Structure formats: structure tokens, C-alpha cells
Length: 123
Image 1: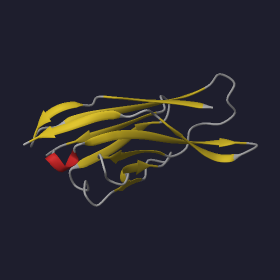
Image 2: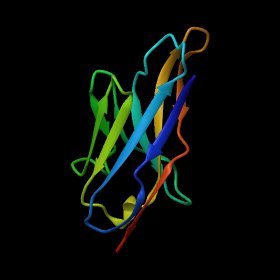
Image 3: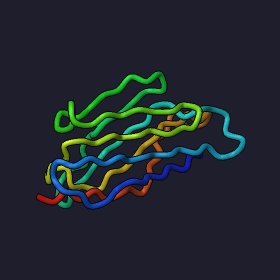
Image 4: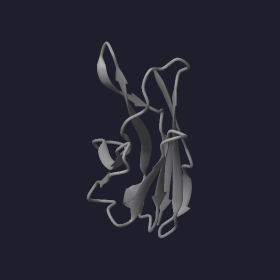
């Protein structure tokens, strides 16, 4: 089992920057480390979309809408993933959720999700 939590959301003006932090905690006695982590977002009435993912080896992948503006990094020892967001636009307004993949001997690799943090970008 993995507990995932996000922080750092808020209200900003267009063009400003914001940093989101995701922390994944494996329950005591867990047999494996967290694998890939990532950020997704969903605006009201819209489909959830990829923001960025990063493997446990540090290989990133970005959604087209945020490439070259956002940057994802991670600390494997701390099981954290940081999303650095710059040049924010009103279209970036959404609830941002973090996910972490964790292996299970019985169920294979499972996805664990946080409850999300809200980002609002005003014009």
C-alpha cells in the first residue's frame, strides 16, 4: 500500500510560476520501492490529461500542452516528485493529481493516487 499526497496549489496570475510537490509513502513493511510517478490534471467538464511522468530512473515524459513550460523531477530516496510550472496560462487551471506505481506480489503493479491540489491561473 502507498499513500500519496500533493501540495503547492493555489491562485496565481498568468505568467507566474508555481511548484507542486508529491510525496509517496510506502507503508511500513512494504516489500518494494515506488516505481514511476506522475502528474495528471483535470479541469471541470474536461477529460483528465497527462501533465508529466517520470520513471524511477529519472526519465521524464510530458504532455504536449505543458512541454517546455513545466519540468518534473524526483528524489527516489524520499519518494517525492516535484512539478515546476512556469509561464502559467489560464488554460492550466485544473485539479492536479499525483500518481505513483508500486509493485505487489499478488496484484502486479498498481497505481495509487492522491486527492489532488487545485491550481487556478487568472488572466
